[in-house]
Amino acid sequence: MMWAPMNEFPAAQPGSRSLLAPPVQVRLVNTGDHACPYLPDRIASNRAFLAERIDPEIYHAFMDAGFRRSGRVVYQPACTGCRACVPIRVPVATFTPSKSQRRCARRNADLVLDVSSAQPTDEKFDLYRRYTMARHRAGDDEPDRAGFESFLYDSPVDTLEFTYRSADKRLLGVGLCDISRRSLSSVYFYFDPSESRRGLGTYGALREISFAREAGIPYYYLGYWIEPCRSMRYKIEFGPCELLHPDGRWRGQ
Image 1 (cartoon, one colour):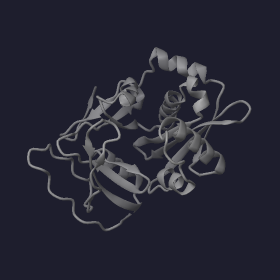
Image 2: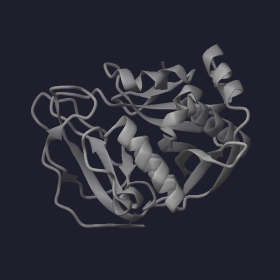
Image 3: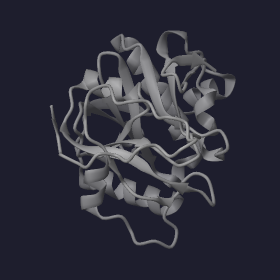
């Protein structure tokens, strides 16, 4: 297990709610203030470290301390005066799909799923480019291949890729998940924007939960739930679910 050396993270601001400590000793760096991507008119900040390789069980412990990863950067939201980013997970054994989720599963029953190690390809990059330009980057430059690979495929942990194809073998969706003995953690899902009626994001989460159940993995991690953010509200619909509280304990929602 190797971490890049970084400066110590500065002390918490007076009056702010303390952050959960990393599960092992590691030096953290403040990544700097930036516009919050989820809540308008708010400033966000993270504390983070750069990882070459992390044992999957130790990364699981980092998630239980409120950390996530983006590429090789393992980070924890550390915004002054705000703790809206709440980690959320689903106990796989008790998950029960809702009526709308069951309809979504039936609507996508024609798709063929393949699960394998994560590998970037030209076909996947083209799908990712179309997805991001349609949904997230209006007016921005197109994503580049190097950024695509470093964001999704340059991973310090064990990562699986779920690919969804139509009967005529068109690639419609790709989900990436980090895996350990105790957790399957959703990293990202991208899909063909022309197939938005299918609800592929929901279907992908359902299939990932099913995979975890079949593999005997007890928890499915959905990243952060941000109650005021409309785009995050779907996560709470995968239930019963648990939220990570400031005392470091997971409790049912």
